Image (cartoon, helix red, strand yellow):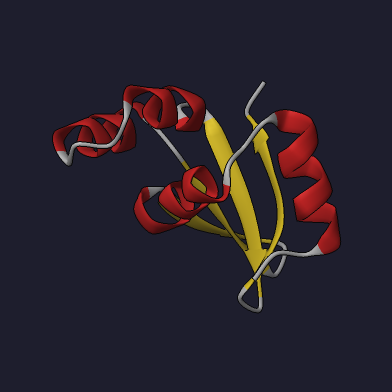
Length: 80
């Protein structure tokens, strides 16, 4: 499930729902301030390529993260 904020940020930042799902499913998980942060690292991207994900999706996911709280995606962004 996506928060209104996450939907807005996805549109502004050019993330598809599939890309957000990939970040959450395969990203490295850590806990921060009561939420889970899923980060798409180089290792994650290699795994996505090995699983046959599209190059476009892998490249968009690289260096990105999603914040999830209580099963709701709060936001998605690139790491700067």
